[in-house]
Image (cartoon, one colour):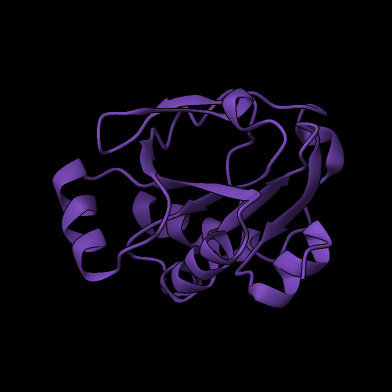
Length: 156
């Protein structure tokens, strides 16, 4: 029953707007990716960075993965990190990515302790766009597409 209520809360929260004060003006992130490397937000200063919280069980998340990948591939000044927000084995996420490959690194985050400078997602997917100066440019709860990414970044 507890799982049912948690799932329903996540679904209903997806419609809730995010408040700008919930993230630091210039968040930091350093996380180990599934391929054993470290992704550090500060290393990508000067580029747009898409920070995308998602899960393998989330249909809208799965639908947006190719959109995010294509946007990253099409823009040399855009980077992305996918944060798998689910309590499962890393091997399951890797197997999922074999069927749904992306052009950017993926890390798994603890659902009880997401990265300190990012709020706990109220719904999935949740995407934060970081501007080249390291500041938060835009946050989305729900799926994003190429048009939304272009609008948020000003890129064509």
